Length: 185
Image 1 (cartoon, rainbow, N blue to C red):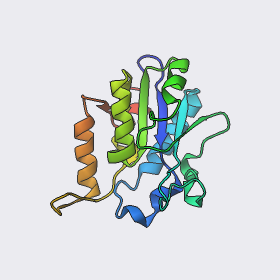
Image 2: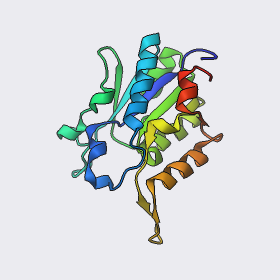
Image 3: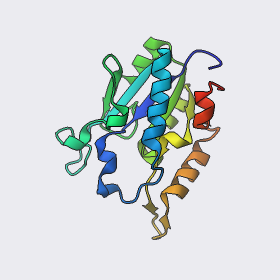
């Protein structure tokens, strides 16, 4: 990487992502892309933070007492890796994430996870507003089909593309997975 290594953040990649409650999900390669990034970061001893959503909503598959709250096998935290629990959409609200990042001297974040248009986006926006340089690899996030207020159905692929377009330059740089793995950022 061109400067200090970025902190790799994996947001809400728990077994809950496979719940039918979300409807059709796009980006089926998200877990494999994140696993590649994790292997790359770990091989270099770079910092990794896992964000775990502990929902307070009664019917959420992210409820702490449900088996779907567990991290997906492909992205399990290793001993010693930081896990930040959260109960809102942004990983910065009601958590010590910002304090942890500042204590690490972190200035750059690579943010991945589920749902790009919800918790990942909220985290990325806040990180950008807090002054972090944020990178989002499009292959390492996933979106779901959405229906707008007019009843129009938007595919997960369209939701994903639009979310990336909205985040690009204002809150983050969108950098392809292969460029991150080649350390071209």
